[in-house]
Image (cartoon, rainbow, N blue to C red; front, side):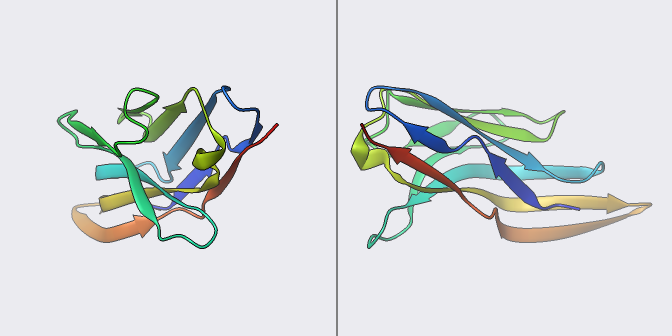
Length: 125
């Protein structure tokens, strides 16, 4: 319960699009402060996009206008639609949650700073 599982990465040509998905496992979970990070070879991990439960979003300057983050809390899903991809977008993309709440019976448990396993995005001709 409360694990993040990404999917949707792959190889795409410059100018192409990809949609990443992230599912929070478990049936009685709630997430807050969801985001996508990326790490390219030899570079530090950076925040790409973030969304709050209230729907507020923020983006890395270099992806604003090309990428869009969205969430479906009922399905426990986070998405990153990536358009007009360039080779500079090549990286491992990670789903992240500031907080995941797990309800077990009458009790609630919290996990903080949760990461997915990452999915590779390669933009190349």
